Amino acid sequence: MTQPEPVARGVEASVIAAELRALGIDHVICIPDSYQKTLIALLQDDPAIRFITACTEDEAMGINAGLYVGGKNPMLVIQNNGIFASINTIKAIPLDARVPTFIFVGQYQRDPALPIEESKSRAVRMVEPTLDVWGVPRYRLEGPEDVGNIRAAYERAHETMGPAALIVGAPTL
Amino acid sequence: MERNEAINILAEGRGGAVSVVTMQSVYPWHQAGQGETLHIDASQCMGSASSIGLGLAAARPDKKVMVLDGDGSLLMQLGSLVTIAGQSPENFYHFVFANSLHQSTGNQQLPGAGRFDWTALAKGAGYADALRVEAAEDLIERLPRIWAMRGPVLIELVIEREDREPLWAGVPMAKQTALLKEQLAAS
Image (cartoon, rainbow over all chains, first blue to last red; front, side, top):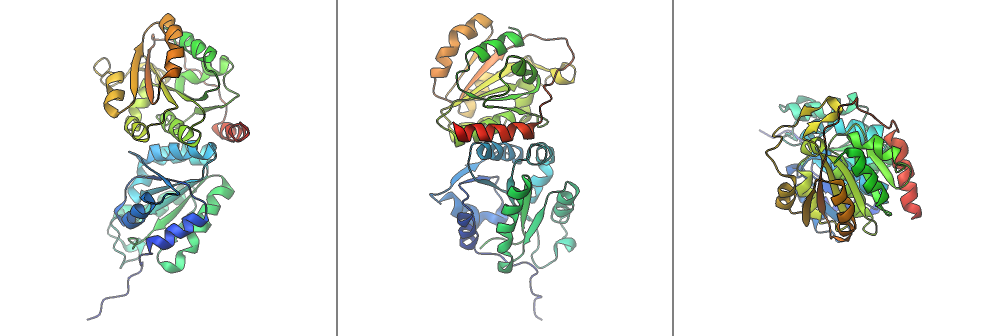
């Protein structure tokens, strides 16, 4: 009996990091996420990036705002539960204060063999509808063919002066 | 001391520091003429002032950053003390207006009021230093020495209860972020 093809496939962390370098990202604010652990490890060791681990996603949004206003080019790396935890701050800072906020959101506890909509995890299923309710643009990273969505999400955040999320659907490699 | 006394002393002694102000210190800071230059209010995101200040301090180590926080606000993102200490911004000055009350919502008492110690929390989190100032004349005397300290430093300002309706400056944060970004780029 053969296994079904996974819906989502991991992307090499080095490929993602190269995209981030091309975008000029200079600060990464992170609340650790197991789906992005290889990416996190790579970014932590990147001499071109100041890597800041925060205690909560609320803090991460504030730090991102201060860095952006101060002339830097930051981004966030968080997990799906962090979106739920930080809705009030997403409302106040990226949306109302119009701060470009480029966010990688790991789909913690997703089974990559299943579509997001069929996941047993409520967090996996609800993160995109939650972002939609708040008008936060979102893109998927479901495999190597979606790498272009990294730039698309970044550019959307800066064009609209607000948040934009890249939903990382499988563990980075 | 009264909040307005502390605000006026800090306004007088601000120098060129970038200011991040939240909750019931926002209106008097604007009234003291400090709301137009190198300034942002942390509005509608209670607890975020310290994190915004950290981002500014990290982005611009050449400038002192002063955060005028509230004790109730800081409790909402208490972990930021640890995050700030972890980054060790030497240009970060964290003034906490401590009245043990949520003044903006009607002077409800804070959880644990009178049982916790801001200077101990800051030092325990890893701040370079922390001190408590109770009287306006002490703040006047100590402020020059505070600015000479290596951050991050937390300064607990013991503030008297005020029985008045909450006041707001009403300046949209989006306008302030754009202006501050422009001012910082030019300075």
